[in-house]
Image (cartoon, rainbow, N blue to C red):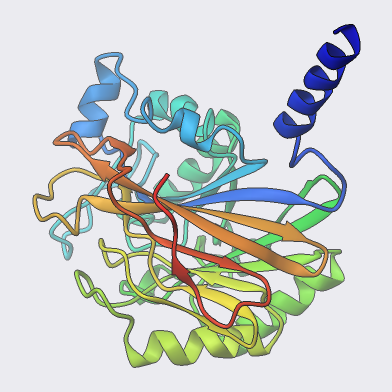
Length: 325
């Protein structure tokens, strides 16, 4: 009996640490996270609530968690008068964000809502809270530099790009801003990430047509071009809905993960998003699994077990719908 008990304990420990082995890492990617002070999620956080409370467990077994930070988090500047919405997250809310997401993508159309000086403050505030930023920087070199994380012996590079107005907020010499999606520059960035020791390179573009469930021709062409020049996966966002997906040359493309934390929407496709779990080894992406989440009136997500997103294993020609959890 004692031997049986020891064996049972060992099996339990092995199952619990299935991803805690060399040369295998699990990374969670989510779409747009917007926690502006004027939004429901921002007000919830201001009153001591946790907009991520119902998804912390879902994301907890990933070795790295990545989100698009769809907001400013500075205190300077004025709202962009050309935009219908300008988002600003209270810096006090960043600790809650960074307690879940170690990586914050800034290549989006709201990072510059309050100007360049405010954007620099946003960079500093996110980093101080504990999140590593990518897709934006104090100059073009920093904006286009991959964020590289090592998990269980696998070095994973993240590159973020904006492919949606305002173009003026792209980083330029002497001007902080976001990384603009230029195919030639992206090819150089991917090559540099490899030179810096990355085993896996994931490109995260902010692109596409809002509320459109299928990727457009431009998205498809660029995604394939990015894989052709060395990226291992393309995982996009911005349209406020999930979009279609495909396998190209044995590599996955997910065109949009949809919203993850975002209020102000009522349509079902706008309040439904995906949490994507990608398993990486030194050869690239070995598998993908998604879990569907649904946002409440405050924009806070919770798992939606009645729905399913795409799954895939290396060697399969196409993605298929996951079995419901």
